[in-house]
Image 1 (cartoon, rainbow, N blue to C red):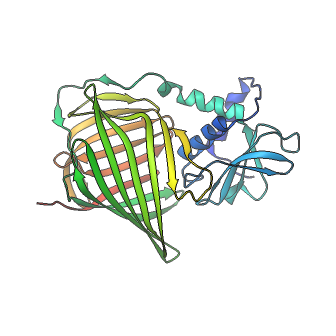
Image 2: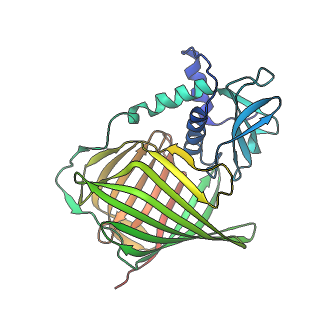
Image 3: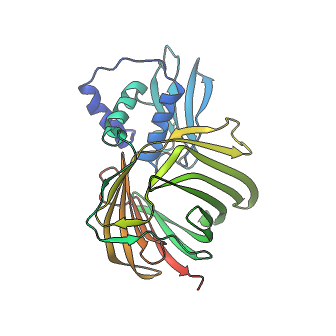
Length: 347
């Protein structure tokens, strides 16, 4: 029996109690499904891909190809049989060589909306000021270097990658970070060097992230140069400006994200999507965490998305991330975890 992802099981339960009427699929609905699939099942649909359109089997399709898992998700746009308008299929890798029907796009989008509804409403806001145990918000110092090891779990197997970060400039208006990441697959080492420029702006005492730029300078054995620009409209809320307090909670609303590659290797132009609405909680201040790089006094925070969450421990003194764990759905077992291996402070 072919295995579909866990998301399909939710769809089956939903459709027993709902009657859905099919509309002609549009790009917005297709992107909503594809983006959710990437977020909800990152071990099946990775790395994030761009939506493309093709004419095949007598009709038009929206689809994304995920090179990491060698699989496709496709939505039929105007077919009348054997593939029908609005039907969603997966194919490749563990899904098999023949298109496997999942459900209609209407049904899937309805389920996504029902999952996202608890986080979809509201505006950026501090929803709980905390209990008064507060500390100054810190950012990594200039010329600080940190090295990390990331373990990603897939069933009974796991893979390990390493990366390093160098903070070139840190102020309350701009942060420039150079990140190098390396991994070895089939005895071939891949190295990516990325330069991130993060611009911050203060609005009504809140803290916003407005833009990111990165340049990929080396990939595997073949050097390449590609600039990636990501912008948000409006700016992306990332929390309070000056201090963090234990028990503090805030909400970051979904905003439009536009990604532009230069050169545009796909030929599809800008990729426009929505960020996931996020609820953030400061769980603990002052807790001790021990990793390969040492023992640190930390701030523990949980970022909750519609169908996943990330727990982050940040060093109290220097603002460097010490450890993080990512979880999918309601799972109590992390899908990946990262820990600080070494930190070299500039003083």
